[in-house]
Image (tube, rainbow, N blue to C red; front, side, top):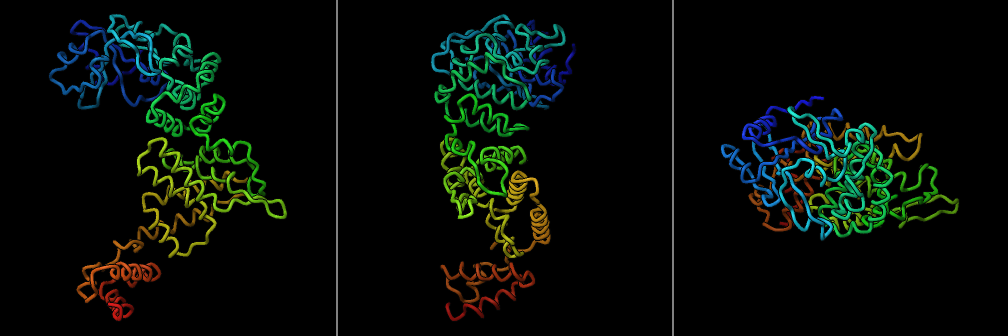
Length: 447
C-alpha cells in the first residue's frame, strides 16, 4: 500500500533520510489517510535527536515546543510539520506526565507508547506501513482499542477516556469491550485532568457529525455525571406536553445532532432546555409547562462554562442563544426583528434561527419551521437594505446633538435611543436634517 504524502511533508522525510535517519508520518494523519480522509495536519517521527532536527533544518524557521520531549515544529511555506524523536516513557505519576522520557532508536518503542491502535501506525514510502499493534485491522473492523493494557493506558492520562469517546463519535467506530470497561472503571479519575484539557476534548465531541453518540457514551461510562451533573435531571424527564414527543434529554440530544457544527450553537443546543426539570408546572388538564426555563437554562450554561474555563466571549454567545431560543413563538413585526438583531448582532442572529429550527423539528412530527424561515428572510432583507437597528446606524451622533445645543450627559443617549426607535419603524426618517428636527421637537424643552 502506498499513501499519498504531500510534497512539503515528503521534503521533511527526505531530508532526514538523506542525513541517514529514519522518518515516518505517524498517528492521526496515517489513520485518516487509511480511512480516505484528508488529514488536518501531519506529524513526523524520527530517530534524529531534537538537536539534529534543528541542525538539519537550520535553513527553515523551527519552533521548539517541547525539546526535552523531543518535539520541534518545522515551518514550511505550505504548512507546519511537527517532528518528534522516537521516545520511550517511564511510569506516569500524575495521570498526565511520565516520570521520565528517553529517546529511542526504535519506531516500535515510539508506537508502543501511543493511546489507541488506530493511532499507532507509521508510514513512509520506503518501508511502507509499520503497524505492530494491528491498527489497520481495527480500522477495518471500526474498533477503538488501546495499545496494550487499557487500565494502564488510561492511568497514564485519564483524558484518553474522553479521547476514546471522541474518536468513536468522530469516526463512527465502536469501543472495544475491554477498552470500554476500563474507561468506565477509571471514569472517576477524569477529575485529575486539567479542566482546560477536558473542555477542549469535550468541545471536539460536540463538534462531531453526531455528537449525541459521544454524550450517550459519556453517560454510559459515568463521565457525564461527573463533568456535567446539571444535565442528569433531564434524563428520562417526561415533559407531559402534547407538543413534545421526547423526554427532555432525548430532545436535547436530537437538537444537538440537528444544529450546525459551530461550537457556540452546539453548546446552546446542549443547554437550551436544561432548565426544564427546574421549572415544570402542570395545569389542571395535566399538561406540563416550563415558564422561564430559557432564563434558568442560560444561567446554568453560564455556570457550567465558567467551570469549563471558557472565554467570556463564548459564555456570552451561549448565554444569549439559550436566553433567546424561545422567542420563535413571538410574532415579531419588523421593528421587533430589528430589536432582536440589535440584541444579538448580525454574526449571531442566524445561529439563533439555526438553533430554533432544530428545536422545533425535534419537538414533534407535525412541527413546522416555515415561520422561522420567513423570519430569516426578513432579517436578511433588513441587513441587505442597511436599515438602522443600532445607534451606530443613525445618520446623527452625540456631537451633532451637542451642536444643536443639547448638553453632554445622559440626555444625549436618551435622544439617540428615541430617534432609533422612530427610525426602526420608519427607515425613511434616517436623514440628518429630519433627525435634528425630531430631536428638537421632542427634547428642546429638556435641554
